[in-house]
Image 1 (cartoon, helix red, strand yellow):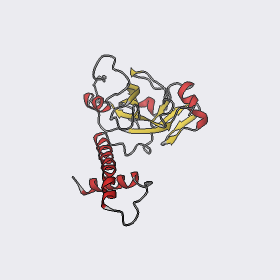
Image 2: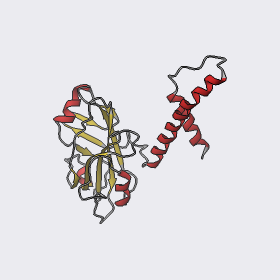
Image 3: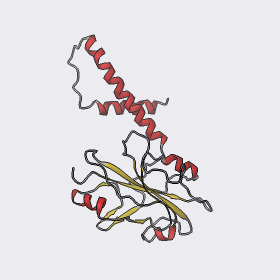
Image 4: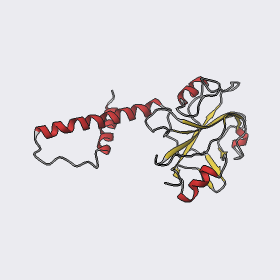
Length: 222
């Protein structure tokens, strides 16, 4: 276990306990012992969360690498929260967005994945699969046109259930290995929920994402 990993755990615990009341000075031993189970839970949550992040692909450039998702009244080229007056439209009115990636290689093909990492929960380690398209021409991405290719999963708009707070919706673009036919692992029609994105990446021998962007939204009635 590296020193930086331990430091990250301690920083996480400090954030989670930031709002909690500090024990009064001179607190007795029994009082401190009663607090230990809570501290254990906090540290466990931090360790689980850090391990979950480390187990997924590097998304450090999620918000700043040139990918643009274009809805009729909203261009998303950086991480943002959908304004209240557009949440119903993005969930129930607008269809699949156009996708623009000016750095695309015109001679290459690409794979586009749209997922919700917060369904059923942000700690589940799985995703809700909203959209998967392969064989997308780089030349089309450079022009910001409608996404055309081989659709493995049709577009499903972001529709977070009421009372579940904000969900993240991530668009991830991969360069497709030359000559390879992409597929969804598992049954012929795997369910959208509890999807293992890493298994898809490994099965199809995809490298790190070329670009990605995300937005946050919640149910428009919340």
